[in-house]
Amino acid sequence: MDQGGVPVLEIRELECFMALADELHFGRAGERLYVSQSRVSQLLRDLERRIGTRLVERSSRRVRLTPAGERFLAELRPAYETLSATVDAARESARGVTGRLRIGFQGTADARLMGAIADFQERHPGCVTEIVEVPFSDPFGAVRHGDVDTAIVLLPVQEPDLVLGPLFSRQPQTVAVSLRHPFAARASLRAADLAGTPLISATAPAPAYWRLAQAPSMSTSASATAATPPAPQVRTLQEGLTLVAAGRGAMLLCRPTAEYHGRSDVTFVTVEGLPDSVLGMVWRRDAETERVREFARSLRGAGPRSGSSRTPRP
Image (cartoon, rainbow, N blue to C red):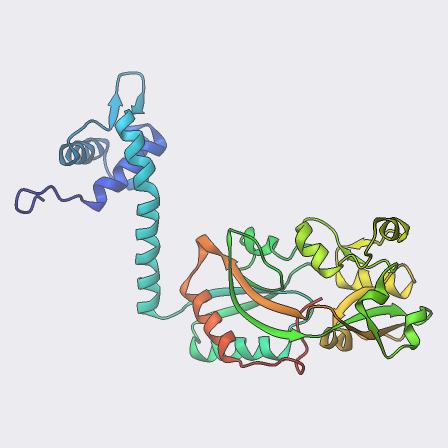
């Protein structure tokens, strides 16, 4: 409908145009929209009249977009997706948070995480939560592939397609070593003392910068680095601790995780001079939902637990 002589675009016309651009077939576009082929033609004519140019060329053999149609589609699609996401979020907010929230975690689901889940469920009883362990060697894959809606992972996070939400559980580092290791009898170490000690790290697909943060190079010279025995790479935290017990290397862990995963053939020694470990909540930038936002709110409200909680981190 035109208002005051100004053409007003109709959502149905835009949906029709995008369906036709995808299908390049009037019949299939109609089936997709549950309307007749003639209705698709009518909606397209109305849209072209409002815009003032041809958007689609149709012959007896094929359907294709005009150059103006290509430009219009390129600008329309992201705007339409944003509008749809806004409407979906408003609808979800109006009816309350329902459905299912899948939460990934690395290592151990600690008291703070479980408290945030309990708070979320109390505030949103219509939403079911699922808790899924995220592999040590793939901190971001489950979120990126849609296996979970959000994940609690060890920093750093430098993924442009992910949002980094609440940070928590800042903890000092320890190093896990075999009881037979020379460090086992010491109460503490300096970071420089680890030079020459192979530090067990994660395998790919964990990004290189993330793997380096969990197993940084302590050598200050190229010759010392070359002399350091190669350290194994592991997929899981348990694999890493098993190799530690076998004397194949050492592994950096925060104190609460060290305590949680304690075993009789491995000891943990405090390391001074290393950055603390920190956990963060992440989710896909293009898949943010009211459920995710509300869980972030619960996690922020859980309060700081630095130095006291058993963190879900390796």
